[in-house]
Amino acid sequence: QVQLVDSGGGLVQAGGSLRLSCAASGSIIKIVVMGWYRQAPGKQRELVANIISGGSTNYADSVKGRFTISRDNAKNTVYLQMNSLKPEDTAVYYCNGVVQAMGDVRPLNYWGQGTQVTVAS
Image 1 (cartoon, rainbow, N blue to C red):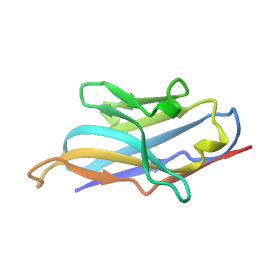
Image 2: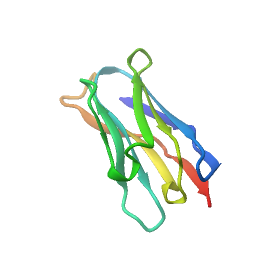
Image 3: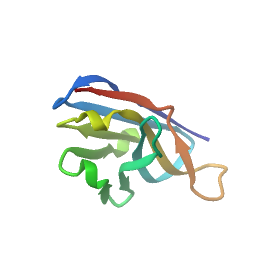
């Protein structure tokens, strides 16, 4: 069993910055992928960024050049540094991990509870 706890959301002015954090805990054998999704009201959940075990990263086109994903392997923690925030970035941001845990026969998806990011216009 794995738990993801995400945090760092809040209210910020357009052009400002926030850093989201997601800490994974539990009987972790290997983290295959960790990343962030977001969902705005009335919209589908979309991938924002992720980082795979080898270190490669992926970003949605809408956030390239503004957001940076990083990790601290020793802490099983992933971060999303969000700069130059725009009102259209307003959404609930969810941490996601594909994690191999003791007792699981294959890596499974886990989700954080979500953290609200609101960018004022």
